[in-house]
Amino acid sequence: MAALGSAGTTAASTASTTAVSVAMANPSTSASALSTATTGKSPLEHAASAATKQNCNFLNALGPKPICSDIPVPKIIDMSESYPGPADRVPTPK
Image (cartoon, rainbow, N blue to C red; front, side, top):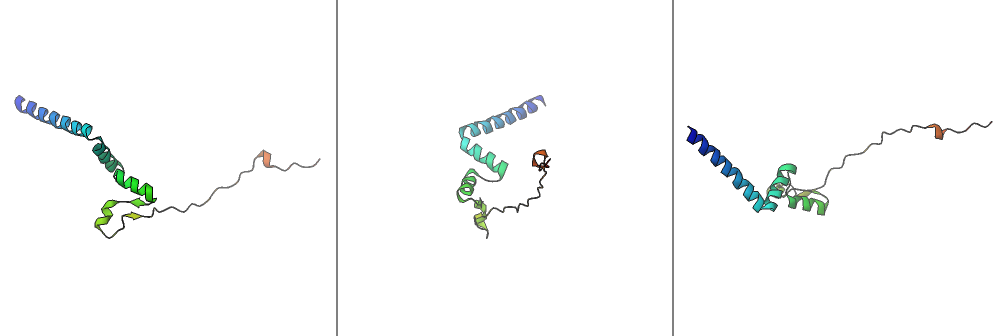
């Protein structure tokens, strides 16, 4: 039993060491995978989005959607009110 546990631990350690080695050998691939996992977009899709000022997703090419589409901008409603302070008061004549 102890030998089996030791072999399993060694295999897991080797697998994680290999993953780290691959990540260090291919930093651009690691950055791409991290970007895709974090934002849902690859670095190239981010670059295309920035260049076109649109939301680009290259997987849209596989379906009927366009690769790049306009970014919806929410309507902004000004709900601010003015709050006059002491400096806004009109002086009364004496």
